[in-house]
Image (cartoon, rainbow, N blue to C red; front, side, top):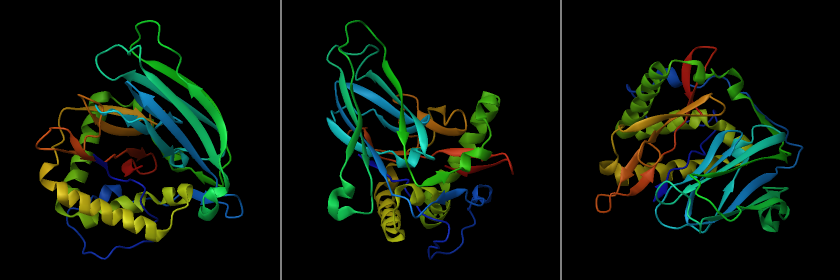
Length: 301
């Protein structure tokens, strides 16, 4: 399975392609509120996850980091958390462990996490300055029937940047759910149509919104360009397998400020490709949007 990267690019990059009539003019970027102090250490925070016989969902500051929903085992993965750490200080970490099958956690379900900090993500030759373990946690043995197990904790992060885009975001939880769902579905269908008809233009739209991830993960323009090219190739290879937007549920993150659509049957991304032989997900694209109160328009997060 391939998950397309949403670690895209800064505002000043221009890709060489013609203007598309299908451009979503309602989703052009406002001025960025991201700042970085170049004199400070470019620290990176990572979560090492080892799990067996369970699914899980990881959030930082109520922003979705990852959701493991695959039917096959994945014993050890590592996620960089900087994209969900918006500024220095206290960060909320939530881990929800859910059943691999059925509605009750297996007595054999197990998950261990290690939260690591690297002081200098630009120092590749010296292992980014070496890691320091901030915390380690293992889910206790399950002794009773539970639909899920959840850990909520706090950790401190020292990062040299601030990302304040959501300061102007509308609290979507206060909008009528039917009205909100209709708006979100409309935006997602518009993005899917653009992705299928003119992927170069879709890449421009995507890249202009994600300049904050260059700030938080310290990537170069060249690295981002490679990601954009890889995404385009993957989409072209899977185009005939991309599924229509249907059988979805609306999900809010970021304390009600960010919306996305997820598949009802397993909680996966609604923009996805299905393997014609197995019926399983072969590619997916995570997309999240928010509404800016300054112009009441939708933007990619």
